Structures are given as structure tokens and as C-alpha cells.
Length: 182
Image 1: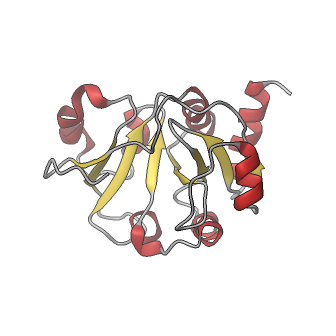
Image 2 (image 1 turned 180 degrees about the vertical axis):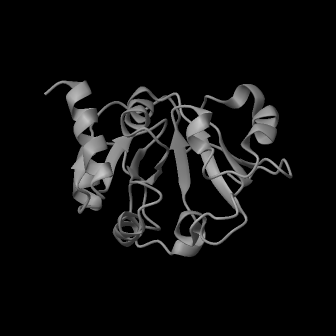
Image 3 (image 1 turned 60 degrees about the horizontal axis):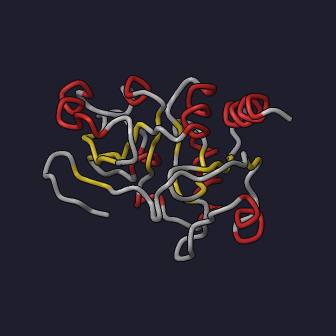
């Protein structure tokens, strides 16, 4: 099965409310449509993660983040050359954002990824997707499709592929304060 077909299949599963696992810059991630309450609830159940922690969203280009970020253009100037790239930023959340996306917080974690598979998945879905490490809370993140199956079964599809070059998950910086959180 070609990689393009597998990406198309993963995107179709996301559109149908499913949860997929896919490689990112450092670890495998779980993804779904961030505006699908049922899909997000399933993802949080898989991870055994409370909604209050919020989620990271990834996009293939910044425009896909517009529905989730308040005054995106202002913050893109501050992000500068970090995007696209392997850096996640906490940005002011859009006022009408559903609680399950950002945990009811006033900020949302976002990244414009350059990972070829993750980026292609965002392109194929046509919007930003959730990107949280594929693991149960408190356990080490999966670094292979096999580890996803072994330690965190239950997702609807695993889009296998090579991880990026990072040894650990992407850094997270609060864009409004400049404080590095991870």
C-alpha cells in the first residue's frame, strides 16, 4: 500500500470521527479532529488523560490554525522563523473554542510541523489535527508503530513511518510571556 494511500485512509478515518496514530518529530502521536467532541473524548480515554490539560494541535501551514487562535496574524509575527518547524507555542485561544480542545484554558498549544507524514496528514484532512503523544498518561511515548499497538491499543489506524530527528518531544514556549514550559 503506497504512503499516499495510507495517508488518505488515515485522513478519511479522522473525518469519520476516528483516532489515528502517526509519527512526528520525536514520538508517535495520537490525532483526531479537534472539533469532534466524541473523537477527542475517545482519544483522552485512550491516553487516560484529563480534559483539563488541553491538547496540542498541529498543522501543515499556519492558516489551518486560524479557527483555534485569537488574532493569529499578530502571533505569527512573534513566532517568526520557528514555523514551520519543531517548536510548539502556547497561543491565545479563540473565544469560542470548545473546552475539550484547550481544557478551558485561555491558551492553546500549536505547531506548524515540517514532519513529512504529519504534515501530509494535515494536508489530506484539510485542517489542523490533535497531536498528543501516543501513550497512556505517565508512560513513555511510543517510538514505533509496534509500541503503539503494544502499550496503547485502541486507536482506529496506525500510519506507520519514520520519526523525525528529535530525541524528545518538541519544546513548548508561551508566546505571550516567552517562558519555556518544556
